[in-house]
Length: 152
Image (cartoon, rainbow, N blue to C red; front, side, top):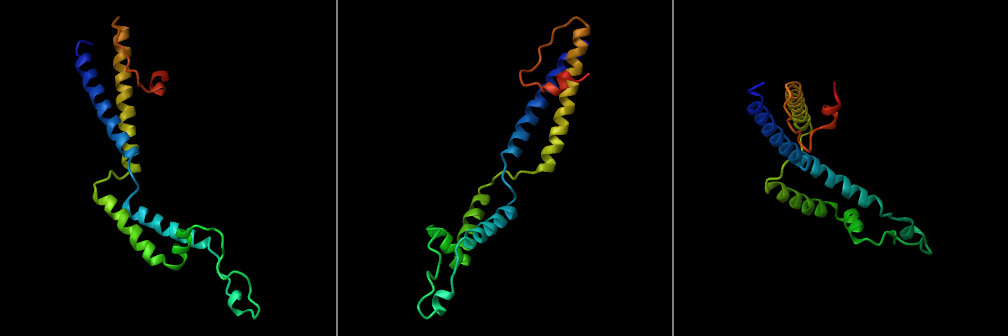
């Protein structure tokens, strides 16, 4: 196993690079279309918490509060009575955020990279075990995957 060290070094560089790339995907944000859909759901949820009582206008002696006094959150009222204004403003904010070049989380890409990382870690462990059979001590990485270390 005279050529194991350069191969092991290459594998470890690839492992480190993949780990950084995977971390970036994990820290990424949802696609812009999903974020805009979340804005719509938010507005609907906020508006749904405000109750209108039309009976207050129809009843001769008054029928209570015309609009629910609770919640006392003005944003909820704005979502109820001016949803298009709120939607336009929130859409503008979200779109501006995405124009800044955010990393979009891609679950399929992350899973593929994690599978590649696992394969590289298995190769690394195979080299380490082969070196051990030859009487050489090759230290493992501190962040080595325990599942790979325990596999037979």
